[in-house]
Amino acid sequence: MDATTAKYAALMLAAGIGIPLLAALNAALGTRLGSPFAAGLVLFTVAFSATALVVLLTGPTPLTKLPGTPVHLFAAGLLVAFYVLSITWVAPRFGVGNAVFFVLLGQLISAAAIDHFGLFGAKLSPLSLTRAGGIAVMAFGVYLTQRA
Image 1 (cartoon, rainbow, N blue to C red):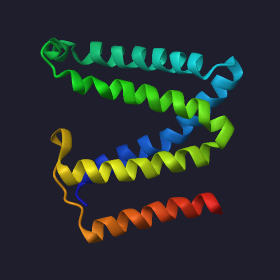
Image 2: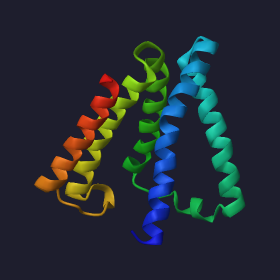
Image 3: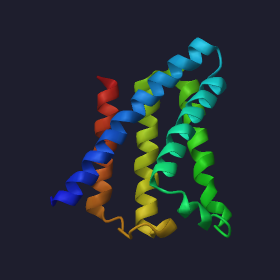
Image 4: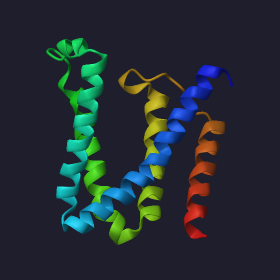
């Protein structure tokens, strides 16, 4: 693995570590506030503020390219809202581990499809039998961790 690949892998490992933390923290906030939707609003306010600060520090010029951007690209924001609100509501009722297990399973399926077809400009990586087997082993491994 070259240095660039290792950096990308480390960054994504950290993001992956953050997903269950996000789920647990926001679920606890939602329980404390008595509303997963209020917790989602707080989360997005903090996230917006942090992101706005980074954009201001790095230069807001890229935002000038927003006009004319295909509308379907904004669906990512709806997907993030759906994830945050659903995990915040489900995790206290279903367990963080169980909720994240199904999130991971969905990610494996969706990522394989996006890569296989090169959707949304993603790097084309056809789903071979070996890759499908690897995804199945990963999914089974996640399943085993939840059964233990």
